[in-house]
Image 1 (cartoon, rainbow, N blue to C red):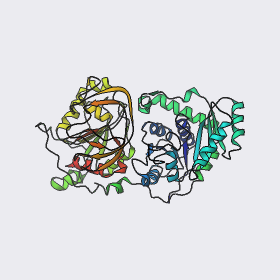
Image 2: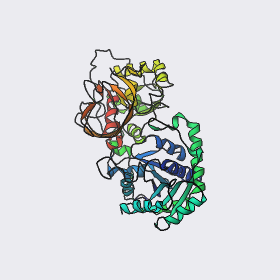
Image 3: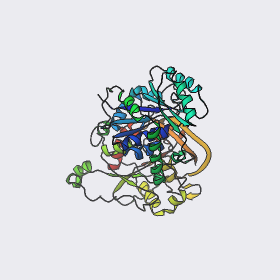
Image 4: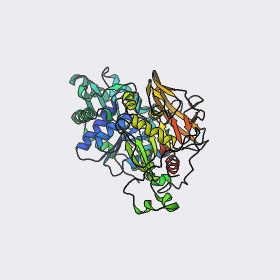
Length: 490
């Protein structure tokens, strides 16, 4: 049984103030000395960065579409282990789920899976008595969702607040906070939403502090904590990366690297990292099975999109995970045997990425040597020949550019080619989120066949390189990490 006090912060629609309230609550309670865990419903990468700042713990995602409903509570328990409070920020409107699939992956769905009370954040800027009808409708729509309180946002004046509170007395849902407009808590946005923490850390720290101050001043923290503590125990055991991959090395047999398709000579053998233990220094077959290959994971301001569980799974599968910054580092980490390049904003930093020619060449040489490389979205662009006309790594015979069109949504995919992440025929759920295009959109050996929302092929598989627009959460398919590390070891 898992007994963690918890709240889900939801809203009638996007733009109501969920991020401000959720992040402010996390920071306000953390400032009181409470161990707080932050979570985000859905695939969003940016909000968890603010949650991390507020709590000092990794921000976590709870995605019932990509990971499946059965993993939501175990992943929650894993992320919130040892905490006195967990705050879950919702996505879109409370009842908005995966398109065409009912409540699946909605905030309401996750709240029910967690048996957690919901705090509804309402933008009250253009209403008074009507707020009661709105809250009543949300509270009565699904009796499986318990709305335990309302926080009124963008309240105009004391008189406005009094009218709102008077109206809500008839709804039976208590008011647990009222927030005025505050310029200090605003966070700048651009083409894919809020600007990530890693790109403006000092400003983000100040914004989180302002959110905490506003929430502490305008909300009933004791009432909110009491509501969180009213959540019943969950009959769940926390998720474990080690158990997910089936042991220290994931129970996977090393797979041979496929032959190169361009006749390129293999690159130099990777150097052995210093400081290895006795088992790793063993020679022959025993040494091969016991060494921990170094997997370099892209980070820094240009590559901020990642799920904490993906890295945990790589480590549990037997890798030494080392972060590198393609904006600053001129070489891959010592002993790199595989590279993972996730999502982010390479289009914003294209000149700087292009200028770091030494690292671009290092990534290209590693890929051509047959080492495993997994790239998602931003990583796909970085591996391309060019991005907005500027040279990139040139691993892929493709060119990328910015557009005005947003591609966004969940995807059902099947692996079309045996690759470092999945065997041919394996099915995976993922998410796309970009305003770029790459031409061609798929290689001679495509990475995925998409089955939702339309049928198409996408991505590139070449030797041990896998590059695609599809973002994936590996907790939903833990064999992915084990397979990748096995290829690194092989």
